[in-house]
Amino acid sequence: MTSKAKQLKDLINTGEHFIAADAYSAITGKIVEKAGFKAAYLGGHACSAFHYAMPDYGMFSQVEQIEQANRIAEAMNIPLIADADTLGETVADAFHFARRYAKTDVAGIHVEDGMNPRHSTFVNDLQPIADMQARIDATVKGRGDSSLVIIARCDELYPKAYRGAGTANIEEAIKRGKAYAEAGADVLMFPLASQEMCDILVAELPVPVCVLGPVVPGTAFALHTGWGWIGAAKLHMERAKELMETGNVSFDHTFPEKEELIEMDVFDEIISDWAKKTGRPSH
Image (tube, rainbow, N blue to C red; front, side, top):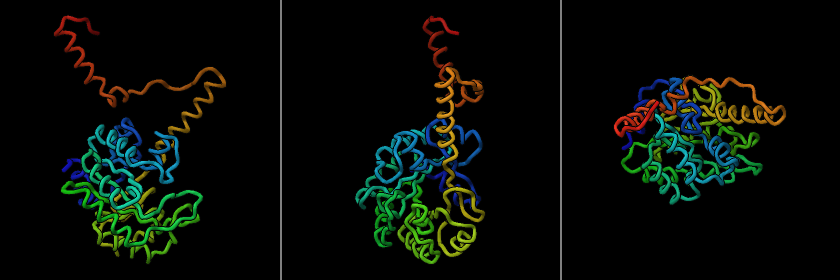
């Protein structure tokens, strides 16, 4: 049982809404923690784009996601939720990767009901309900006796017109949500659900409901991504162009929080102590 997974479960059980904020690297994880957020979130698109320069179409491996997610989780004291996509192609993959996530510092994962390639130019459909139930069941078994929080992502309200795979039918969303909860999901997540839809889902479903994106009052929490990694990439592009065109970059070098975020004082103390004990000079 990982303490951060237990921490996330306890946080959800309080019933108080929270935001899991965009954290796509170890230092951004520490930044959202320092800003006061109670949880952080590593999106699949954030990780695949920022670290591997590829879209989130389903070819991005969970081996890579687990590695990056654990690096971020270990740097923070708050729980991290990771986007686990479909958790592989088969129930055996789901079991294997859930077991690997359960051995890391990652507190929760969400598993979606889309089929690969996802969110691309291909007009896709959702997995049959029975197949998604089997995937969730395998994920629960892979979790074992850990407290890893399993979030079932339902894309029924994420329509095909927006590169989703759903039909935006609230009755179907409820049907799928109940089936996923029955299979063992701790939380249900619905991207692009409106306030009206969320009110219905919260009233009808037996487990907490969360959203991807802007906060929706009445839901358990929001996974909020995009503003961090896209903003960082955009800023880097702007400054790279400025440097290329002018030979200089105009920006404020001061960042007083930097030393705390990378624990310079901790390592300075260790090095200074070593230098004093061995008669070596130090600053």
